[in-house]
Image 1 (tube, rainbow, N blue to C red):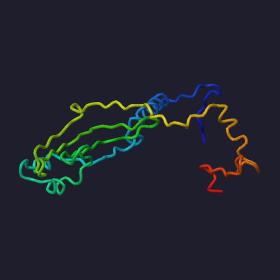
Image 2: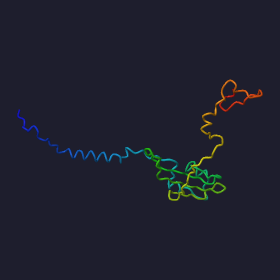
Image 3: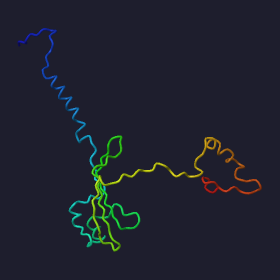
Image 4: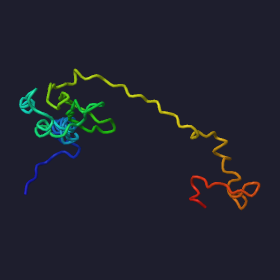
Length: 180
């Protein structure tokens, strides 16, 4: 068997190595964009279609008709039951971030005093008003304790003589004493 002779210290040629590395790099850069790594989109709420809205006739249909067609409303008006809101959105959970809300819409159905439909209106994101949440909390009296109260507040409460008051009276059980 005859083998081709080659010098011992001759460099080996790998003609496909640069192309293979470039291909692997391109695949690694494209992978994060694939939907495989993204959370699925979740439909929340009752999505009302245009065909369903066209089936509602103002002045003719009642609350029962609307509920049979669209289902129960997501929200009703604050004072009374004259306005129904059907709120829907598509959401996606993002890693280490808040829930991403996309394609949010609201369908508003107004009724008169007799429960007959007056208007049906679709409200998109451009017509919605932002609501600023208040971060303050209502203070509850008696719950804020100083450092000294926390450290020395229970000194003298426990022990053999802690249950009787001067003059022979009994101390009322505390909130955590279970009536002992």
